Length: 348
Image (cartoon, rainbow, N blue to C red; front, side):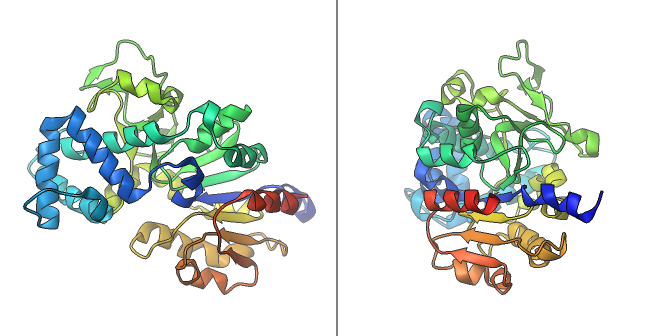
């Protein structure tokens, strides 16, 4: 294949990196609100384990009285929760090989709360429908979000998507896991499930030397389905929590983090939407440091551009080392239809 023949498909392929700011118009709770809402649901539905979580939180934040989770550091709590699991792991006391009872329960209520607040297919805001409508099978999305907003929007407009590199449809790689995923063979408290109502599908990662298979269910895109399942059962969401314990869980999706330069090499424009790139998230920052500064050298395509869409006052500082290049542009504003029009214009 000649260089011209290679460049033509690359020119029409794009890479989207998506963070929490992308979901703002869908009113999915951000970290502090999500923390508070999830703990409230936890207290109502699973009070016995919730008491243990409260004791962990009180120790973590040195609090004696009532706790207002909206004013506490979510990442610090997740780090301390990981420390507590480490102690159990050393003594062989973990609930399962996937984690402690407290951490798995916490992930469940975070995921269930996200599902509760994610718009159903009929009520997806127009901006997301317009965004997915202009995507095609040559586009690749790397998202650091746990929610399934993209999947629901794609189903609404009738477009196929896949979580697999070799799958059919728009590729969605969820670097931090997803609320509709689970790690390991579907089971209910260690027992085989009798009826696979959720239609679990293998992602095929274990074929590529990953230690454990990940399964996903499209049925869990529907928030009403969650009411049929309880914590610590068949629905055991695989989401990767922030904090310094992140390295343990992220190994299960190392497939997505391995040699991402191939993704950059086969795409043209890059759009980074609502990704904070905070200094305490060392994995995401390392990902950018390792790949973004040499982006233009992968294909030598002179017209390639990076657009960073982020309204934060810290965006210029956080993305400083990328903005030094002459092909990177910071659009210091919230994601809007104007940016979708830019995506369309750049493609023509």
